[in-house]
Image (cartoon, rainbow, N blue to C red; front, side, top):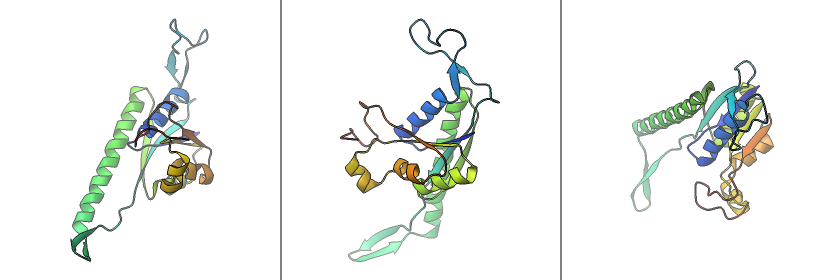
Length: 186
């Protein structure tokens, strides 16, 4: 099975990757109930032939034309060279982000492939899940309340309704704060 994990620079994304590594790529050590003396689960890496294939995916938002105000009631579009520089910086950030996530996987003994897709994240993630033949798409949740979801939209909600494969949304703990501040409601 191919497991795709959506990776960005949010805490929700980090929680989703950690959950996948903890639950899909490790299992309790043989013997007993898998708990040590202090009740901590001892984990052993799964043999590669048994485990699912892990793919870390980052959706890179499309660049929109940049306009700068040059005076009252007038604006100028950014130069093509500036747009290329911004695009190159975006691609470099995506590579760095995926390299850090892959390093986390390697430190846990799990090999992971990476992919950068372009487009609005919610649509790009659904598209790559279908194109890759994913068996599971895992996304983090920012813990937005109902009103925030209505105005800001929710990548996880969109994917849950439109992805071609099963989707798992890793929610923040109830007492946790999301990336934008404290949770108000769910």
